Image (tube, rainbow, N blue to C red; front, top):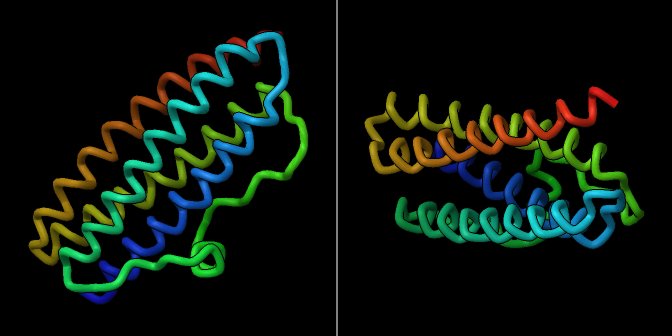
Amino acid sequence: MENLVKNLNCLLSDLNVFYRKLQNYHWNVKGKDFFTMHAKLEEYYDEINEQIDEIAEHILMLNNEPLGTMKDYLDNTCIAEAKNEKIEECEVIKNIIADYGTLLKKVTEIKEEADTQKCYGTSSLMDNYILLYMKNLWMLNQTNSKYDKK
């Protein structure tokens, strides 16, 4: 169980850094599709914010402590922070695709470990994230193909 909680805390860290990154992009994105991208980024970070709470509460339900400081998150994340600068929408999409790929890999690993430990509540929660991240990746890749043709 200790390793499973460690991985959940790493996921919590990834989600917190990704949340901040999405919000940074929301403020700094530029390009001809600004309005669409600006709104979509807000949708993504609101979704991630709910997941942050859900994962932290799940760790508590497992009688453990979720990480809670930015230092903890930065020390345990696989997601790179965004720079505080204007960024083209095509770069935002490429970066978000990479980050959702990282998240998908992490939740898949957690699911596999949870199944091995017969921690089916954790496994079920990861199923929800796997489907959501797969759908987000599919949609982002469809959008990304628009930029690849330019």
